[in-house]
Length: 133
Image (cartoon, rainbow, N blue to C red; front, side):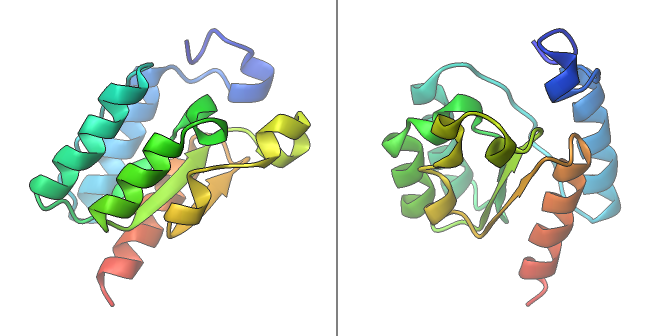
């Protein structure tokens, strides 16, 4: 629902716009991008496992509300061993208290929140920097 749901919080860019931004920055950094969206926890977990089996360099993921509820996503990230960067368009710490805790963050290499779509670019740059070391 990006671009429609609460644009004052999430911005006006829709999912296709974010995908174009991610693809452009990822390609500039030499990454082949797999861009996916789901509202289903199990599908999200399966994609993390798939990334491991396909020998991905890392993960840039926006778990949305699953960050605050999903031990399964946390466990999948940890099991994959892949560097993961957690992205949230909004500053979750400036919002409701239940958004201040993330089950994903302890399994992630880092997190970006509150920078809108720019957060995805920052996450890709962080992933590229970590892959270079």
